[in-house]
Length: 327
Image (cartoon, rainbow, N blue to C red; front, side, top):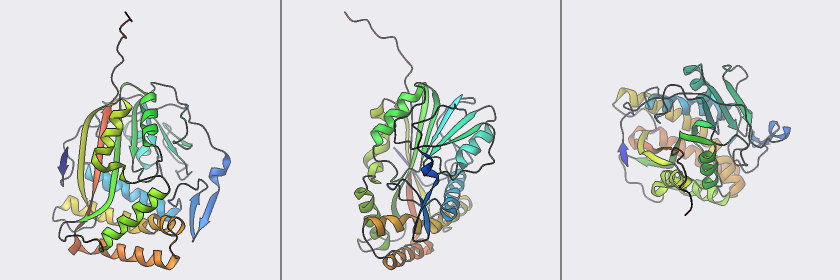
């Protein structure tokens, strides 16, 4: 498994396309929001992240730095120039799906998410479905050329089921790609003790995600590659990239994307911590805000040279083979 702290420039490009089949639909109640501590959340109480403007703007910053990091490439899997059916699982604001559809106008793209936070003005070859991707999928089997999964940290209770469904609904020869951030913040310049804010942030957030049954530790010990392989895909690439948080890098490109990544984190920290720390771990509101402020200041400090690891895996569904008749 490669480890890189450079921009991912030398990777093959993409493709596009998709259908109108849907997963098991939810009721209209998903369009109603809960209001907690001044932030709005979807009605699906197991999902901890806000879906208000502050959080959706942060999600777009997350897309921008990743696009910079991978040299403008929307996918690293070698899916060719004209895949016919593409699924974006947990599409969020839909920005990846929209960019993909714009890049490949002959394609159709489906983006699925629990929150209706996507724009209304979209390319004609994009469809957004407000569904829970953890429910049973009702797409046709062997249908998608490409299933894209990105940044579902602490959003999935049953990863084996998700990978299995992706395998079932990917056509033979099609690809799955998974990108996930290891939320354990690291430093290039200091040794992190157990009482450092980076260590305490990870300890408490990971504890909260364990309590809600959606651990962030599925990236550990080659977890993404193992999950994809166990579902039946042939893993073709597994990499871990170091991604700077903040504009401390001397490299111009890394400096720019690091600044975007800091903006993503800066806007997201409150949303990351508020529900998990207060509602799940039982902290007081003031405690949460002080903790968030401490983490924010540490990320902003260029002396810390903060970074985290981005895990990437893609795999291919084997071509169908003729079964050998029983003797």
